[in-house]
Image (cartoon, rainbow, N blue to C red; front, top):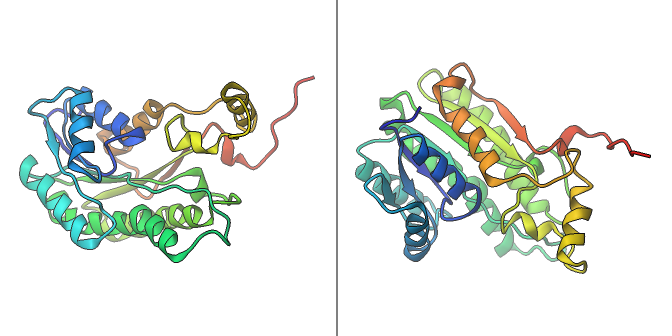
Length: 256
């Protein structure tokens, strides 16, 4: 499906981004791996099986300069770019009172600003190949949650940024968004109650999700691949929730 296609995934040294990188590789793509440090990128490449189809593109995409550098490095090494996945994010559970300017800036810079400026930097290459952008938002971009106001703001901004970019870049570049619910990653497990034993905390959290479990990173990766592929060629500006039903807004019926 992606034979010879050139992919850059921000925040792909772990979690959903790493699962997406593996899925693109399995589909025949060449993939640029991004993480904050050279060491984290090298570890991710080793875990994927280092080879000619993997490119290292380290850099903290919280700044415009870094976005330009990461995209430029990946595009040069890959010889162009067909798909950009804006996946990088910062997550922290903090009350409004506990959220200072530094934390707000960190969450918004990585989760929202980087998506805009990586997309801007990638535009010439993406236009050359009628490429696609996939933004990774969250169920927190579709509804509010106490204790993560800054994260909700970043992810909601990413949802509407997707719509705006889709309009502006059509018909040359398609722009879509996937909104994962709770996923079984290091970041996702921060939502588990630390006062409970691990199995009890997982069961209690799963009970709040209509499908009764956390998602797997590979399930989100499949949605990313679909939005990046020709199978979704008539989709742009789409916001796809892959969240186990978490954002449906109704209460799960109790089984007696």
